[in-house]
Image (tube, rainbow, N blue to C red):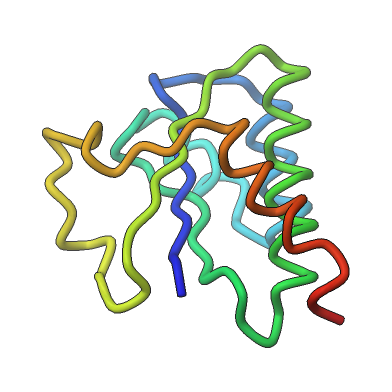
Length: 116
């Protein structure tokens, strides 16, 4: 399995983005604002792909990508092994974990219908 981690590429104070995270993922509004203000160090979404909840995780990822694309806020999409802990990532060298959004979407598209 693969673990996907999402954060903003650079700090932002966008209130609508904080509200989106608050409403969609039940994060506190202050917590959402703090995560976004931390930039690439403010991980706000983590999930394992291809588990029992794959359909829900796929939906969440697509909603995140769509929302932040509409807001023109760049995201960092990171891919690690499911047994890796995001707390142990080399935050000064995130490029080793980067996955392009189109590649992630292709993986999600290729798994369509395989999970219910």
